[in-house]
Image 1 (cartoon, rainbow, N blue to C red):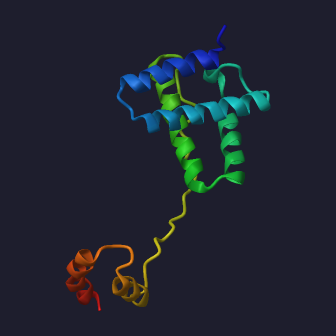
Image 2: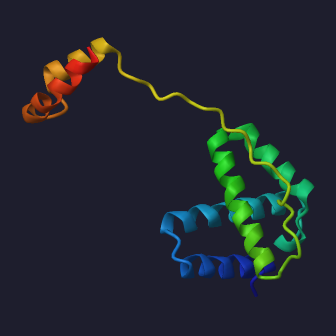
Image 3: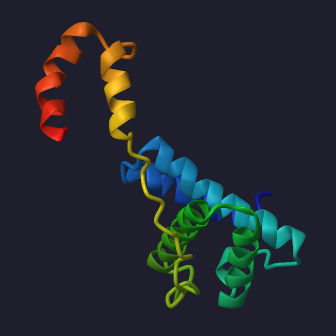
Length: 145
């Protein structure tokens, strides 16, 4: 007999697919639910996701920030927000324990930019792209230099 977690997870997966969520989104959302469930099992958490408290969710998220990158923690948080919201919409809960929680901070990471010399060498060799493309890019690159 399926547990309450398994029953609600299955129904949630069905609803996500019915809403036309991409397979990647479904995988991400269900992965977050599975991680939370595994954490609850390991930490004597509730047997029913509708009984999880805000402090339990905060403790779970704090544990993630110790081992995962900020962006991964933020994605997990947002996936669990969706699950909690779905539980409320399904009237399995009256209020989401995540209602006033804040997502983990994700620091900006600047995208590396090629230096002028690196760009000159790259365009000079044409190694990564064909000669027609290089010739087409030369006027644009000249504007930069």
